[in-house]
Image (cartoon, rainbow, N blue to C red; front, side, top):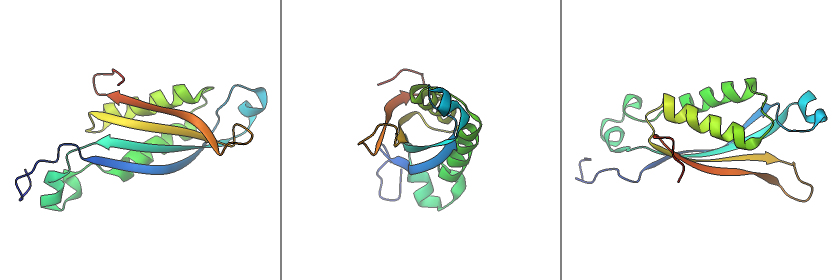
Length: 130
């Protein structure tokens, strides 16, 4: 509980528009270049302890999450955004104190006339989607 006596249920830590270069796509030409993907993450995390302590040790370190995902995505060579999104969600749930997340993975410029295409997934720690 915070000093106000209210718990942080429903708190969200987010990362917005994390751009990473990677090999992604099903076409031969896509396998030979690096393209930009963009991630938006919403991660359930009770921030009440961090709000009281004002310490990074008591919160979800979004920089650490970002660095881990950047490293993974840059080294990956998936064909589908669905696969990449699922693997990124699994990393966050397995390696960070997150029980639920919503992840949007966009591939800008993939379809003529649209700014981006992609997937939005929700995952819980037990592995089941919403």
